[in-house]
Image 1 (cartoon, rainbow, N blue to C red):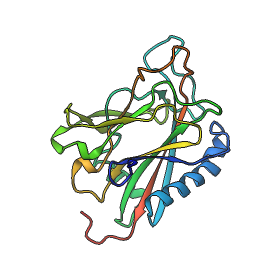
Image 2 (cartoon, rainbow, N blue to C red):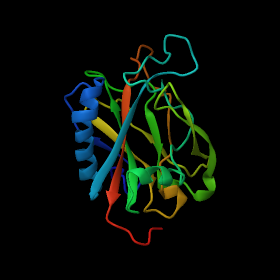
Image 3 (cartoon, helix red, strand yellow):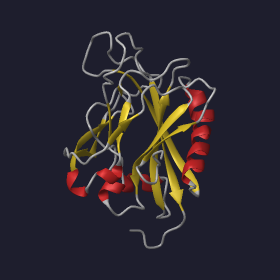
Image 4 (cartoon, rainbow, N blue to C red):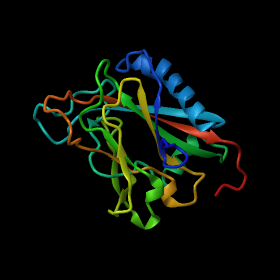
Length: 232
């Protein structure tokens, strides 16, 4: 059975898009609308708000040939090594600017390649089945928002203590038509482990020595559900 956003917290779907994902006008226009349509179909939510994106283009902390390349929108660009979750409960207050009615929301990341004619071979994204994590595995840490290289911001993120019960997955050779959706934060869930999906970029042991550098875009949007009076 394929993984799903509701159960494991992530899903790989086929969602072709013909536009240039390095063109910022295309991304903020046609591609954001494409993402809204994909997200609405997958979640069945009542509304979608927000939208932001960044790129990953190389390894951070190196000046070698695999170093981070400049990104079209000034985002940091480094492959996200290290197990983490981007959001915690502190994110709820930040989202009140765009979700003011005390409604439940699910922040989702839509992750895909920007390159035509090649698969994702270098540093694919691994995601952890959220049902294999228990709240006691989770610790909080200082993170960095890398959305704008001119002004990195400190944030509170979440990390994992290793457990042999945790189940990790990655999707080798993702095509240009495939999108990986994964949960960033979900206010409908009471259990800490069910609110978010931990992830990291990983070395694929089967990667060819001459594999092309990975260039990916990730878009974050908020799926909004109903109207809640007594929000948990």
